[in-house]
Image 1 (cartoon, rainbow, N blue to C red):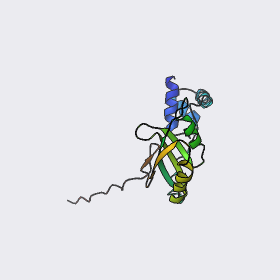
Image 2: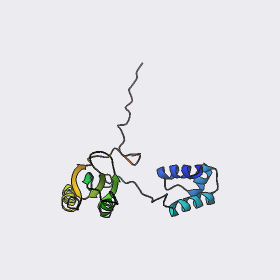
Image 3: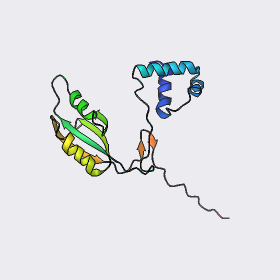
Image 4: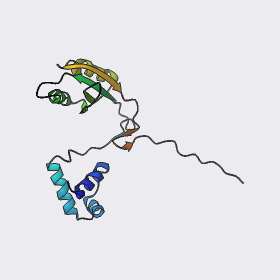
Length: 163
């Protein structure tokens, strides 16, 4: 992949709402070139989607996010793909990753309450054939998410200096 595409991707990852003419100026090319590059990368699924990062707590929406480690028995000729597909097709599931370590998959899921999330894990996820174990961790507070700091530290206190 050429340098222009890499630079466009780096910029879009931080600010997907950028004006294409502005991005063209930053990249040293015209707006049409930027638009064509982005369209081609969308077509090739290099750019997979655009998302808005929302602090639901500040929006007043009650939500629970959990990380679930899932241990599975991999399938012959399919590895973890079939079971991962079954899991990622649930609406509650936000992400599924194949990971190294004691578990095989890391699943991020969202629900309205702890009980709802727990029910999903015990009744839907744990009962899938070839799932041999799960461990659930609830997100209590987000400090940084997708490269964005979600909380700001205390305002720096000024020390009064007197002569």
